[in-house]
Image 1 (cartoon, each protein chain N blue to C red):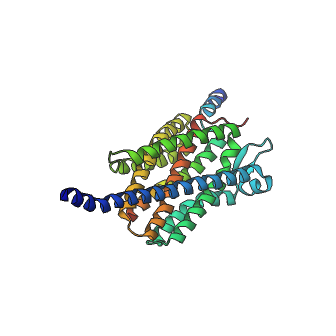
Image 2: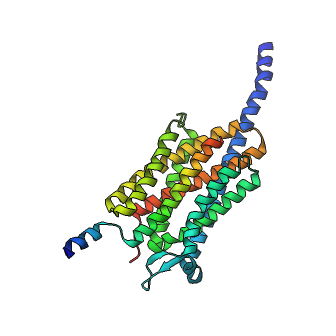
Image 3: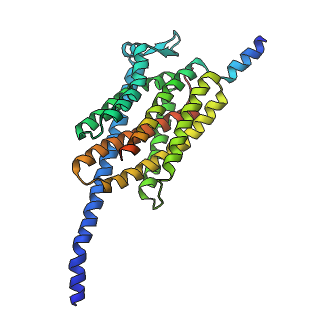
Length: 250
Length: 42
């Protein structure tokens, strides 16, 4: 009887702690997913505006008489490459960012990528963009759930996937000179697998990061950085799937 | 010769494909930069 009481009283706080950690983790992951979803919504609206509102479209893109995408204006190039510059500067300048700074970084990058995604609206039909977006969202949900629930340690995949992305960048740059449709197809297929892996890997990394970070402020920063990482993975997966299955405007 | 050139062009990337490739590369580089940055930060 005394054992029952001692066990009961000694294990109760531990059980309560587990439940509170799980509820905290759930809240943390939910805040990340909400941020990704809001970011995608903002991106979709901005992409629609930059591809469909002629005065804005003409600021960023060169469109031929028959409505085809012919190039990017200087502003279009700046908007397309600004996220790379901002992320580079942020990684050097913000060693220990505040939650507000991380949030600002997230929304700035989301707005710039969203605006530059208008290029897809000019090249692909609206129906194929919508279909591919839904397929990407379903795949993202499944892969993220896999990363969240799997007991398998995915950390070993990290370096392999990063090398994969590096390979994709190099292959894409080389193909700008080769102009090979076959290489472009191979890049898109490999890209789908690499970013599918990155979605699961980043989700597990975020989950583990939650347990490592003690204070609320650090978790606020991790939530913005985690959302940005998942958002970028989503956009890349979407672009590769669209390149494979999207239907071009005639 | 002209026929061969036309065939090669048809199998290659159009101007539109190249613009899309440039845009995709920007997001790819953002992904690699951010993933490496996040790993070093943690």
